[in-house]
Length: 83
Image (cartoon, rainbow, N blue to C red):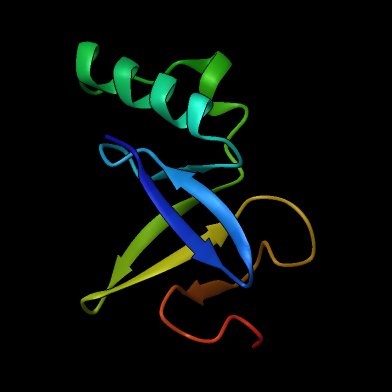
């Protein structure tokens, strides 16, 4: 089952197998289904819609966005989201 996260007032959905982040639950579910049925490989069609990835560092979860001005930073999912 995909994981829903809220960051900076926006809702995102995460494939719990590979950690890719999507704007909608349906695409995250497609990704998770593909990951379950094809371990170790990715669907180019689905992953091209990913907006980021969940990264674990020192026991904390961060989101790394792929596009836009925020793409070069890691954002702590448990912070306020404003910095």
